[in-house]
Image (tube, rainbow, N blue to C red; front, side, top):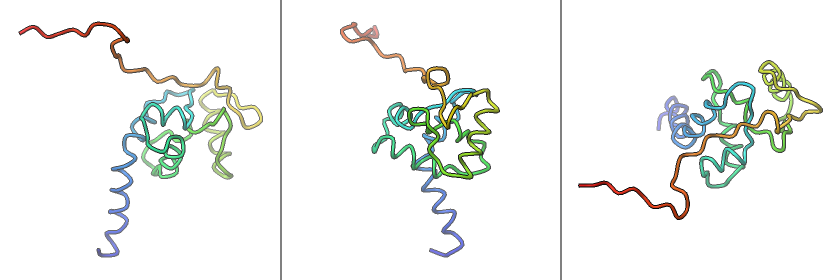
Amino acid sequence: MPRELLPIFVWSLIRMFWDPVFRFVQRIPRGKVLTYGALAKSLRLPGGARSAGRARAATPSGKGLPWHRGGCERGKILIREPYASLQRKLLESEGIAILESRVDLKRHLWKPPRKSTPKHGAPLKRIQK
């Protein structure tokens, strides 16, 4: 493969694996956060929270993704400086109060809407011919 095509190839691989994560993160509303574990559970990511963390690390800059709204394990900001300060500023600009590098998850945790599924034991509707 020619060397100049390598970044395009790498970016296409990242998009292929992480695009569902990027689309899901875009749905997190302003003023809310989502943990890696909740993200992984919602998308049924193999590898769980670690996979969600890897997807966040692969977040492309300049694409308008609200990366700062994800990844607070038990409310704690996990990334290192200088990005931790940037995440803190972005969260505070959305009205999220941060105390000692922690977000109050009781107030700010986003609970994604669940897909409607029939309740256990409920009869399924049949289509009449």
